[in-house]
Amino acid sequence: MKLFSPLTLGEMTLANRVVMAPLTRVRSGSEGIPGPLVVEHYRQRASLGLIVSEGTYPSHAGQGFPGQPGLVTPEQLAGWRNVTDAVHAGGGRIVAQVMHAGRVTHEDTNGGYEVVAPSAIAIAGETRTSKGKKPYPVPHALATDELPSIIAEFVTASRNAVNAGFDGVELHGANGYLLHEFLSPESNQRNDQYGGAPENRARFVVELTHAVAEAIGAEKVGLRISPAHNIQDALETELDDVQATYGALVDGIAPLKLAYLSVLHAAPAGAFIQDLRRRFDGPMLINSGFGIITTREEALAILDDGVGDAVVVGRPAIANPDLVRRWQDDLPLNEPNPATFYSTGAEGYTDYPFYDEALSRN
Ligand SMILES: Cc1cc2nc3c(=O)[nH]c(=O)nc-3n(C[C@H](O)[C@H](O)[C@H](O)COP(=O)(O)O)c2cc1C
Image (cartoon, rainbow, N blue to C red; front, side, top):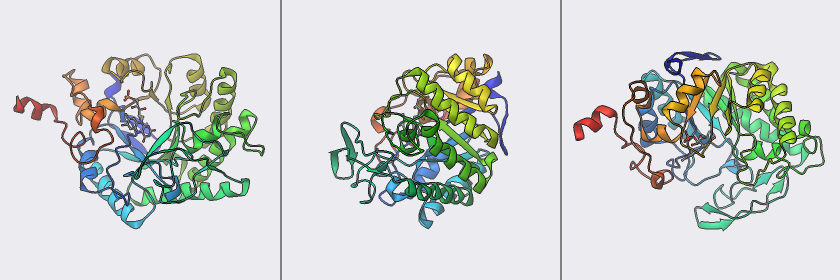
């Protein structure tokens, strides 16, 4: 079964093609420092071919959730060093997902910093802050001459990640956060060269990816995208526009020869994503999104049908630290408990049993 065969991404050789999805779990406290519980969580999952860390902020202003870890302070980086050492000791590989929340945050969450986005358009609805639920703020529209400082934050955070022992970084261009806000014509209504036409909306992500690749090496950089995911008001509803925008993005980064492109899309086998794959001409990681939880059958089929090079798995990896073994031997699975996804403590985080442990409890 191809799913359980090795794969090389840039400099990394993965033991199998089951990739742990980036999964925000908000257990790093008010200072954003991954502690022993976070170390244990990732250590337990080292048998996945690759772990992508939860979304991790490159600057305080970019913090999206209370309890989210950062890649900024020495204490945060020391915490991550314990995580990466534990994963490597278990034979695993781990990259840091670098995530700037853009407008998907609040001053009560990001330490009082200005909330920034491509345009001064708020998300409808409320966000959970450390002081309860509040309406999303109207973000400050980043001026053209402010964009290099955001790119510099990503470069520094990516260097920090490598220095903390990560095998590389994944730039979070998905799910309605800052990079995705530049791509969507709803959240990006700029008049400069970073807004308007599809190539212009793709420009910021292309430039940022180039800068990070130059700083740490393209073979250590992946990018995650979620075209037409239509989440957090980063709407992309015109198919022609979506194809043109992501086509420009992929054409702009293809010459770099990145470690991988990770795509979250409901129809990964369809013509659109497969066209992007041809144009990217490198390893593509596939996740079909939140609609249906990823199953063993789907994961096997993505590899056997040649849809992608690896499968990115979220909720099953939350609930099954030994997911690879369970899928390989077709063993029963633990069920994830959504009530503990964003809670605190060990419950629903480090207490999902391994298969043998579950057997001995019965
Ligand atoms: C609790 C939770 C946290 C998530 N956090 C992130 C995140 O930090 N970054 C990201 O790109 N996607 C995040 N996602 C999306 C997952 O990576 C994945 O795309 C989604 O769970 C669908 O895959 P699945 O069916 O295998 O669970 C999160 C999903 C869940 C359920």
